[in-house]
Image 1 (cartoon, helix red, strand yellow):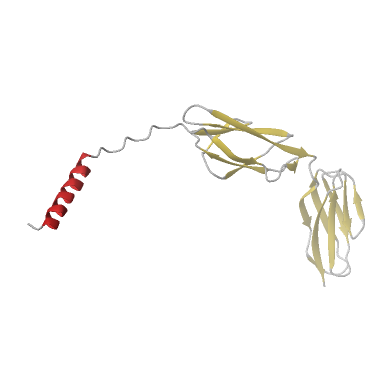
Image 2: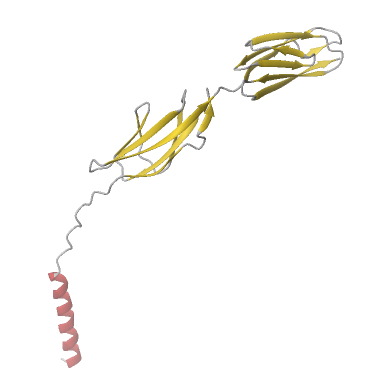
Length: 195
């Protein structure tokens, strides 16, 4: 046997023997990682009474997640939004619990202002009439201090319903405008064709 062959054989045996004698690495001990709230916010933190808004959150290392008020369990998620419907200024608390029982909480507040003026419905008795025929324009509103219909120059108060009649001589677009107590406005238009 050539000397270099003997060396190679010895080296191969040493390597093979060394591999067979290595012990597998022991698994790393489990470490309880505390839960984290990565985000918790209201994209629209100020709303009017009657409006809904979203609250968004993200958590990591959580076993369970809940929000209050009202107490409601949520899914564990890196990024998620839920809809809320507060009736007054409300502080929402998000709480997460980790596998080790550790809890972390954060709060966000949603401010609720006065309800906005809203036109719920507008009805017209006819949208196609002859010149001089009578047309009725009726409305239903919420949260208003006044309603106007132009033409014919109707000025209404805070009543939730009202009607006005007109006898258009040409095609006319009626503008119904509702004003709220805080100066906010809602408006709709309807056109009556005259031929």
